[in-house]
Image (cartoon, rainbow, N blue to C red):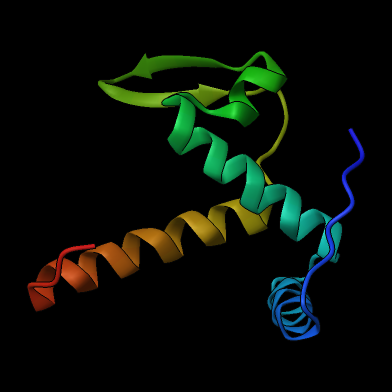
Amino acid sequence: MTVTLNLPPEIERAFQGEAQARGLSLDEFLSEMILSRSEHATGQSAIAASLSAQLVREEGVPVLRAGQPIGISVVDEALDRIRRKRESAILGRSD
């Protein structure tokens, strides 16, 4: 699918900067943001569904078998979210 976005220049620069910081193109960065958002909205992983991935339990731990490696940017983003939530919980803030 192709989508055209008309963003204010300051928003575009901010997204471009964040994409570069993560080693992604702007298209890749925005795609990951949208897919991440769709996971929250649908309650299932859009990435997993598109890859026909399988969630299995191994030694009591859920493991996603996608048939290919997960990109480092996806792992980094997940760790960043976990750290932000943990910090908020420690500081007594609700998100």
